[in-house]
Length: 351
Image (cartoon, rainbow, N blue to C red; front, side, top):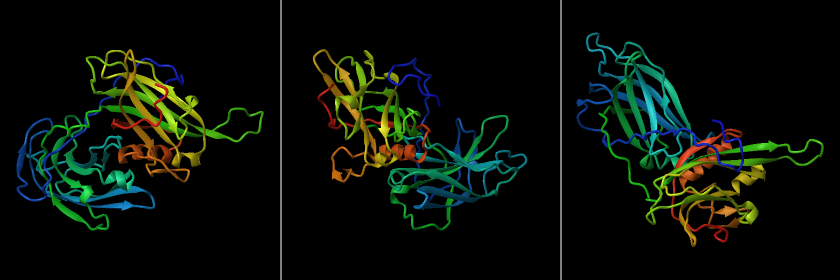
């Protein structure tokens, strides 16, 4: 991922990177396991089971899925009575794009043994907002992979002290619409922290880092009037001074603005990351005034900053998870698509 070269100028919009988020309806672990599914995933009688365990390793702050084996899978090649299966995992509705994880492919078998661990670096708070989907597929080198079945585990209800093996029947996949949003729209962005930026090698000055905030685009902003002219405003709290404020340009007559604008804040120490919060708010520029459309806050979400209780340290699990990913991988971009929410801006004097 390459950021725009200028810190404050707007660049030509990058090609849209759209990823569909899978959503499924079936959540029961009992009932018939012989269901015909036809569509984009091939045609097969779903059958068999998957053996797995899940565990949250607090010390590593990682979610581990141990995929042991599958038994009595459907044959993607009925003439030879075999498949080339592998297991794929998703977390849904994942807005920070942790991505899919996959096991290796086992050739010519309906009873594959994997004994592999799929790992996600994620906070337990965000994990409890997700549903784990384990799907089994036949790998086709020259054609489309064929869906062999799946299971879903609602992690909000899961007892993470339970680390024993689970043996669950595979289910058919059903397409469904995505869950309704808050109506504020969403923002695609990326953030990164550069720990040490040496500005003047001739002088002995303490080295501090930089936070880069790359506002890529917004989607489905609320139409509070016939047409809106949106822009994004940013502060790194607790600093609400004019110096801290940065803005994108105003894009006219669109509810789906593509800003592709990077903001840079320097003088940031690694210790500040647990105390600071990046507030991004989206505004509609009207002739008389600007109207707040929605926003988000990236931070630890602890409710405190430098020992004081503050109302703006209120990041949602999704927002805090993106911030945590940034802190865990210095110098690398952490990207996500986050829902905008209605909130009071920490600083409204300069619109």
